[in-house]
Length: 268
Image 1 (cartoon, rainbow, N blue to C red):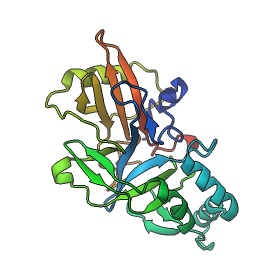
Image 2 (cartoon, helix red, strand yellow; image 1 turned 60 degrees about the vertical axis):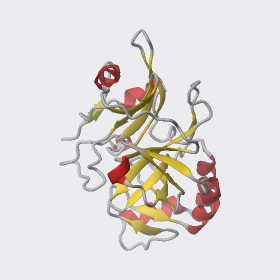
Image 3 (cartoon, rainbow, N blue to C red; image 1 turned 90 degrees about the vertical axis):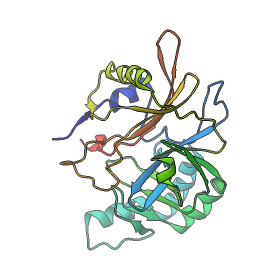
Image 4 (cartoon, rainbow, N blue to C red; image 1 turned 135 degrees about the vertical axis):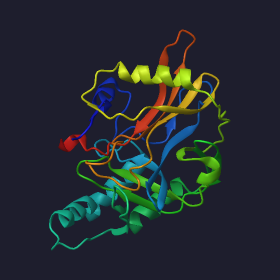
């Protein structure tokens, strides 16, 4: 039986939109102001990537604008979806580069050529225990009628044994403190979520893995969906990353939050 998730309520509140709020975000906070922050996910056993959600409706980022222009010329989405509904229709305009995860990850030469100059630099890629400095390699994307559509900028060489699970990337270094005990902060943030009335929710708790003063860096993810994804066995349908500020009076303030809808709310 499918889980329910609080994503729809977060959309209404303007806190999170699975198809529009995943671009690099200049954080409006005195500690992180000017930093561009991106989510990082292990999309499959062989693909780790900076992920930017495809807005689709209003070309919210330069990446949306590039893709929409090429899509208008070459009908990338239509050709892909037709091929998925009818095996007799050949796949045109894209190459499948990875089908081991929840997405069939696709490559288009025009898309890569125009998007890559915007990410062709070093990024600080932060995990649950440390960070690496990496440069994106390939530009690929995932298209789905129900799940969040994504642009993915692949990362090679992230050392998970040293740095833990990859969580987010920034174009500037952020002096994270990897503390040992965040139970109090985690409890407050999870209470914050639990007090939001929700139509959809899964049971994955939010974890705090680092902080800068009263800014707490979190993930909501069990990291298992990259290897096996099914509606019978998967527990995490809405992996996300976030930064919260905890005020002195205990108020929890979302500074930045971003996630994927792997459940497929639009098709439910």
